[in-house]
Image 1: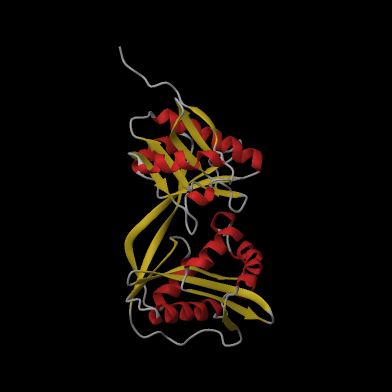
Image 2: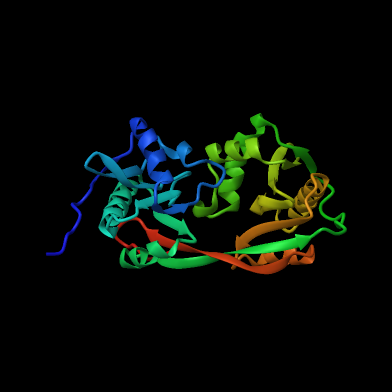
Length: 290
């Protein structure tokens, strides 16, 4: 007779689950993490965050809040070793239903691990775009870009004004929430805003990992694109990272973002082999249209 583990029960995570979730993530587990500037702990309290429970033990979890709406990302996915994939399938089904109730329009996952791929295909996810990586070795930084903008270090009170800028500059799946911007602000070594006639029209933030710098964000308002504002922000980022001791700088962009790719190549960035595919599913009756 073949032994099949009993089906786990799916329910929303609650604050009292925090110790058990930490224990799950420290145990032998299949895991996917894409927390950006927040931590796995930070997402507890944001819906949907679901757990699968068996005999009072948490055996799987899924955090995929629309942060910000209407697009959601899988921020945390974990399944205990030895548990069947149906436990996690049930979590994804419940997550999609919860996202629909919240009015979300899509669920995305960046660079899913192999253990997730078959499940994603079976549930209607499709590859959408590759996120690619550029690298620039230390060297002279061209003094280029618009001169009619004022580049200033961001202050905490400035962050709220970046939300409408993000909404104008990016498709929903690429936008940052206020919580994400605040988390980034606390961790980066450089965060600059471009001001034009008293309003923010672009921003960048960058961080240091060992001896490498990373430009985590470079955005300009579409009304002022092609005026050299992105170039000025890129110069500011490279200058700050060099000042903090970076020997090389990386950044990511979508493979189909040709305008950004041309700018980076003009500044001496070279394409690396590192990439991650975004898998995408619509939430609702038409699950596969982008």
